[in-house]
Length: 110
Image 1: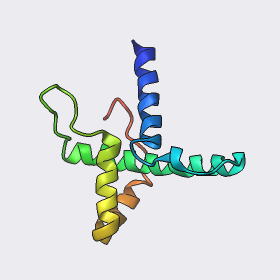
Image 2: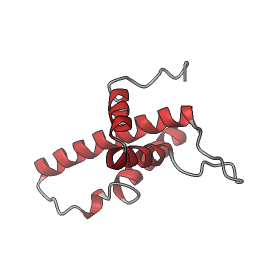
Image 3: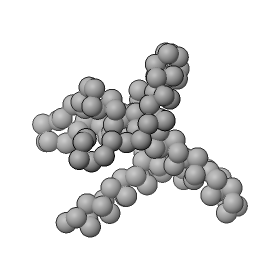
């Protein structure tokens, strides 16, 4: 089960990079070096959204639906707050970018 859980988290990560978030599949990039750079930038953006989502979930937990799962993913939660801050709330965006310079907490302290 542990291996399956790790595999599933990787599947969810790529799914959010492809069809559920950054829509990486729709890019017309075909050159290997350019695709590598694009994938690197999307990965950095995904980690930024995840970091903000983890922090926001600690401050204001994601709603749990009746079936026991979260209403939205942690990544999506961070993306929503980060996008809103970048558009409308510059001081909040600066606070989020300051958060990005701190590493994720260790699993034992989370």
